[in-house]
Image 1 (cartoon, rainbow, N blue to C red):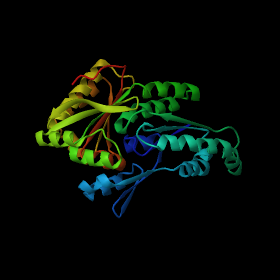
Image 2 (cartoon, rainbow, N blue to C red):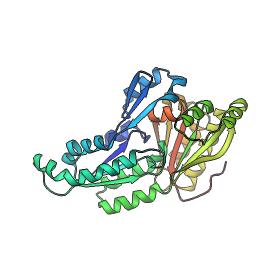
Image 3 (cartoon, one colour):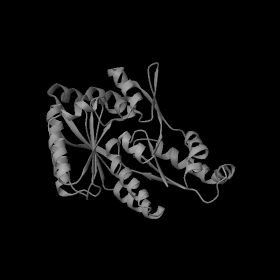
Image 4 (spheres, one colour):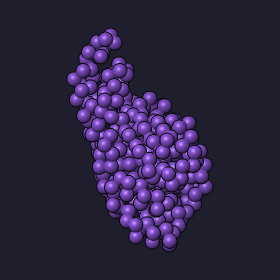
Length: 312
């Protein structure tokens, strides 16, 4: 059994390599430049080093098409594994889940021919799971899926458990630049960040704390100043670690050099709390897709817990 994710799921490269996770890439075009977002560290570094700044909000992103997903499976994955779980970001914010679901029909129809040519027999299973979250918020479901695959659990048991974790995963985001966020939202036809809010927020240095839960995104708090916002968000994460998590992992992604993440106020406290409670603290560079959608320098944070109200 194996796993596949789309590139905008923020999870460390080391984890992907250790668990042989296949990444379905996203093509990102900014003016005349093209980036292949496959979570590879070199391409992320090239994007950051180019300092695209305000131009990023006008980027065009193209997730794997239905045909590209079919090709990936029929030419590679059906020859390597007997069952693949595909985990994607929430279907409410990206077409990738729909593309993978549509591709699955053709894959399940034609895999026998591909496997026979490769000298393989037996059934192939492809299961698509909507993590119902974004960026680092997808990590708990991916980590749990990898654990269950290693444990040799049955496909139905894996699907049931991972779906449960997806429905209890919380993703939080602290943007750095509200003007950028509004410009990107406007390009995509998303009215969730109004001009008045962006202007007022930038003038007063007020940042929203945004949450994604079960596919729905929206503000759950506001703070003055990015560094104070980071301290508030990390402090909240410490509370959740102490209260208990459904998957012993806290994932943080950052839209820039991860060395900057270490210096943010409150981060050392989160690291200490995770160590004390046996929770793995994962650090991942934000995907190129994530950076063009929410701006460089943003923080996202994800964990799975019993349902609760956010308190900021």
